[in-house]
Length: 110
Image (cartoon, rainbow, N blue to C red; front, side, top):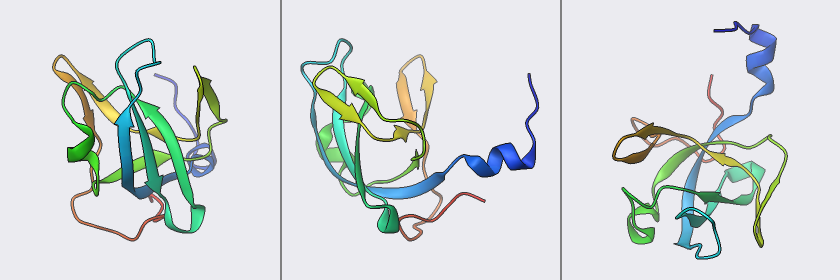
């Protein structure tokens, strides 16, 4: 495993946000949802996430998540993904990375 410096870590914008909207993404090659998140001072951003095995759109709404917001945007079919939703791949599906208690949207991981 390659080690990184503290300055490398500081470059990654890992922030908290709240899911505002989620809907199926039938055009995706693998089952996915389109998800819109409020990142407070960083604005509302959207992404595509393959979290369909463990979550429904309804169970995602209002959930506070951890996103990486400074990767380049990525075109996924007809949809433009603006951040990376963090999670852990398991044999049962992706488990979203979660906060132990609520924090203001846009709070940065430290």
